Length: 76
Image 1 (cartoon, rainbow, N blue to C red):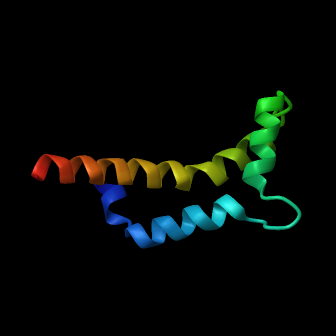
Image 2: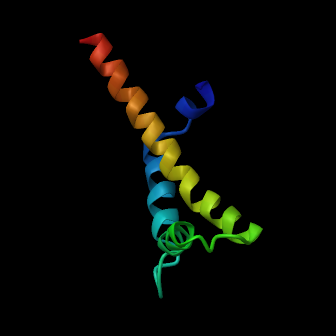
């Protein structure tokens, strides 16, 4: 938990945003891999790793924002 708090929110947001849209052309990997997941064609280990790589910063950012909002609610 403390390790996540040490990462500056700006850097976490930049990493999440960048990996969510990278590569921009022809289609972001995250969109491609989510399409594959919902279609049932996400079977190669490389594709699974790619989905994990592009999703992890977004999940960490969401977790950090949720923890931050709960902390602010409990303080007020």
